[in-house]
Image (cartoon, rainbow, N blue to C red; front, top):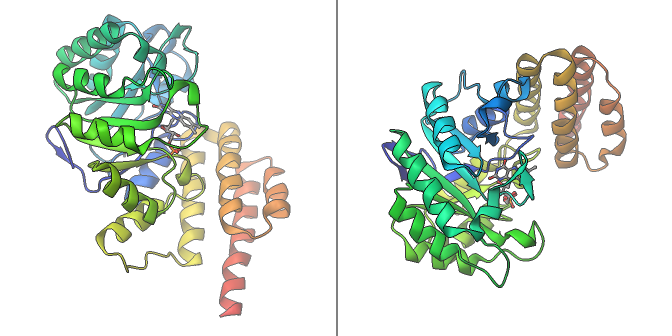
Length: 329
Ligand SMILES: Cc1cc2nc3c(=O)[nH]c(=O)nc-3n(C[C@H](O)[C@H](O)[C@H](O)COP(=O)(O)O)c2cc1C
């Protein structure tokens, strides 16, 4: 799959997720086979960039190319200015968020709320595409609600405005995360445009990725929640798509090492206090993925109050988990 000058190493990409796809997680997923990994969304209101949260969201050190920054906003001029500033700081692709279901992001209707107003969508897309010399991509839902599924119309509009790839979460805005994903609408969108389309929504296993690609004809798949506690899903899907019989299973030793390296990178990125806090979320997910009965281990890990204590406890529990498998073999 190609976006502008960039040929992606894999058509399986990480979905942007606020609070999850920080720089350490993006780098980890890219290492484990994600073809692309967009940043958490950044508001187009530059007055809000002076917080440590926004500054961290704009950091790309050590990130493999192409570096994608996702912007959220509703004002074409502010979005264009934000896009230019991010390109100056190293963004190589600008992704626009029209998929987020939150009513208001940064005090204004934006995200998927914009899908209701096609003329505003056209102004936003045209202005941002004209403002930067890097590819601009778009993430949408299938429409506003089930009575207003205008995904096909928005996709055609996006192509006309110069958008170079489209990710489609196969639900309407009012569906939030409920109900079945409309892969049919994604298929309709794919057949309506020539730009690459990424299918998104509930793809949680290699077989599912294959089925969705076959059904929709999409150029690639975008995976969000299934990467929580399982960043290796990208490797599994890549292997499966390459050869149906391939075995992509990682050994427990490899999994433990990935988890501990992830912790280290979170501590380095966020520092002591926030490092422990953010790592808790990922550790909770890793526990669910790895342990048959995660409750006790989880409780133990959640109680650690410093990076050193948390790292030592994680090392102990995941070492034991590796040993159990070795002893059972
Ligand atoms: C915690 C979380 C945060 C999210 N944040 C964003 C975001 O910042 N920008 C965006 O376009 N979508 C965001 N999404 C939506 C995802 O990118 C994706 O479209 C959605 O989760 C469906 O894919 P999945 O079923 O593979 O998780 C978020 C989803 C979750 C679960």
